[in-house]
Image (cartoon, rainbow, N blue to C red; front, side, top):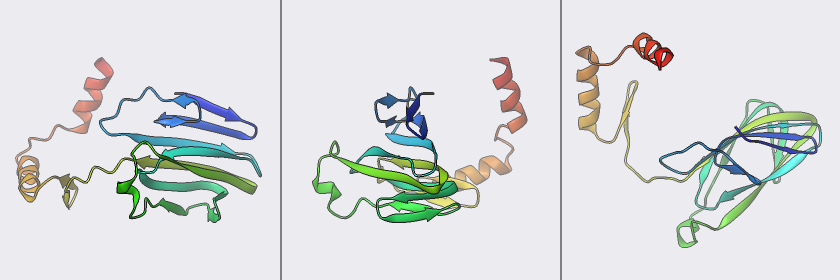
Length: 157
């Protein structure tokens, strides 16, 4: 995984890009997932397409995102606004992330909305109510592969 390093900042790029660093992760939809460790008062800029939405979660310390202060355990939601559809998907926005005097660790997850309908019930998420019924029937019928089998198959490959 690529690691972006700047004075007082280490950014691990799990998916998408950060600065000049690009993850090799191949996603079905565009997603940026980074983890940033910031020394006290250090900061960096993160480019994101305007069409993305997502969130920044503060794991430790405090960060200032633009004018907003977030503390450990808090989430800052990225809002695209109502006028984003009228702009180009390639237009970008700059997210300024800086630690306070305490330093910080944060995770940013942002992606391109797919506008696909989703239905959720219990542990299942699907496209339609019929899919939910099918998933429950498969589960009750013992047709779901057990995690222990998946773990064994992963070790042998």
